[in-house]
Image 1 (tube, rainbow, N blue to C red):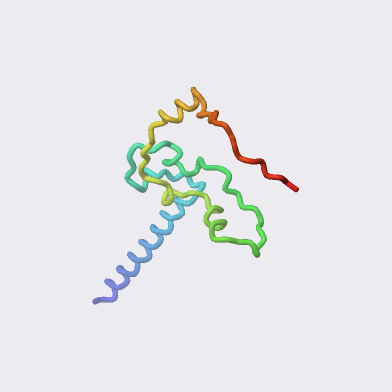
Image 2 (tube, helix red, strand yellow):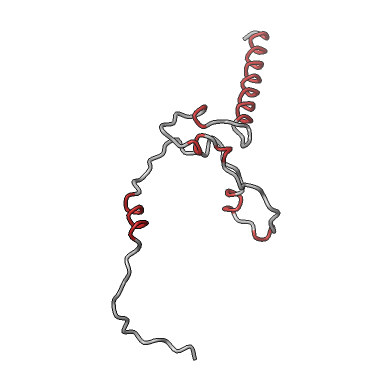
Length: 118
């Protein structure tokens, strides 16, 4: 392998690394990246296609004694890599019926004794 070919391969590797890091920067929260620009998606709501629309991911100072792994995960804003690529909505027929008619009310006789607090 000649010295010129080695330099070309090294330059290509450096260019690929720079392109990868710039692509990664574009997908971070607040950069305006869309999920459909990076993944094949089918009929997803706009909130899943645009992770920057999610609000409320500010970080508050926490006591290090009470840190948990779920706090670390929940503290991060969503990115295009953590958003779902498909959405399958369920029919709301049952809930709509309960909203109109109300919940079932039990009219049976209560025969149990009341417990004394004393």
